[in-house]
Length: 186
Image 1: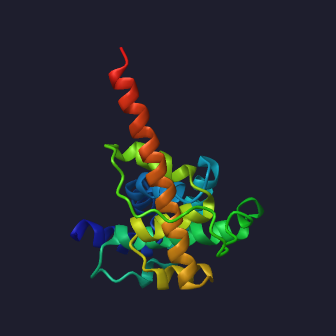
Image 2 (image 1 turned 120 degrees about the vertical axis):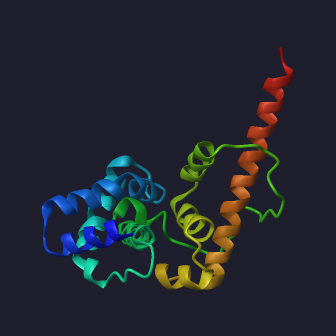
Image 3 (image 1 turned 90 degrees about the vertical axis):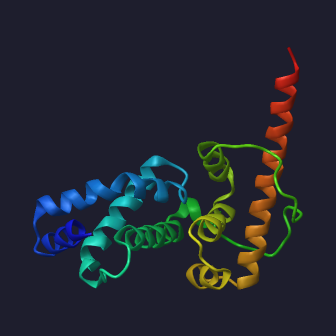
């Protein structure tokens, strides 16, 4: 913790080596956060750069009472959301409506899946579903917070999350059935 406090102090003094050390320490993890919101690595890298500019700009506002990584993560999530809102290729995908596209499914998935496979499935979700699923299930935002962040109704956040979850469960069920077929066929 003392190393982290000193690193922050050195960054605030404008020491390039400290800024590079902070970037190196968190960039790989934060690139993963950014990639969960956008569909390609190039966009994720752009969001990462935008996010780190904000990190360095607002670093003096960080209160050492909390976790620096969590503070940076929140900046990255907000940068990703703002990026999605600004880019034309994502704007259509971020339009939320109340029309049910998929029935809500409350079943639990019956598949053993590793984290990488689950993240690959999440990336296949439509951008709107993916964004809300990431914010709620992974980042821990409430539907009220998501609604405020995205400028939508709380009910829209809830329904989009339920639809994203239903799609994932359906895909998991399909992958489980395919896995069982492949296991039994010799």
